[in-house]
Length: 276
Image (cartoon, rainbow, N blue to C red; front, side, top):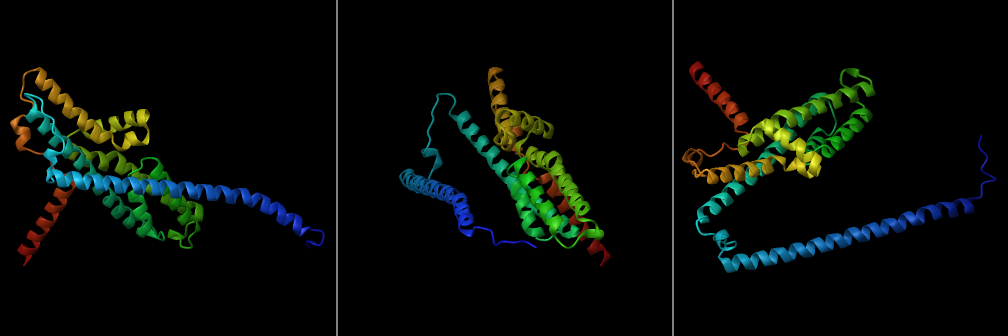
């Protein structure tokens, strides 16, 4: 039995207030800093939008009139380099979007089979985690572990620790497949670089530039390859834009995965028609 008669509530409350007040003051300072940064960001965003609007109005909305670089003898090459760079980075963004939706589909299916609560929400978080290497998957694994451990339902009536370990192992396997097979393949299809080269570039970029280097390793490698080929062909007096490359653009991101799926459904429809 506890005796609280000798407890001085006023002294205890003063001690608690003494501990809480500094935390509240720091919280207020943090909120003020965040609010100021947000206001500064919105102000600059509005400024950029206004300047962009007036520039587009004055230029007639044509990109070629915004940046004009004329070097005698290299006008065509500069225009072609600009188009190729735009293709590389647009393909990279499309590939990232494809990976985002693929991760959502795979995770939502697997988590639903495992009986994880909030499977769709966790799958969306796993999709966003693809944009932040290492840190994103780590946060995703932590959330999966918390949900799997504390939820009431456990697949096969496993113990909480065993069930959590099973979920984490499957999530780790999915991320390894995406990192080592799916992601390099999709990006290499769009950027015309070998998947092994993408992996090597990601490792080097991670050591040099950290997370940002991993994210942009593939398009930077494709950009460097483009300039290297152009420079070497110019130095050897060769055509920097061979006709076969001009008439055979790279396949869209993920085409190696989409084409077999389309072929499967096409063959399936043909079999159904023959069966009728």
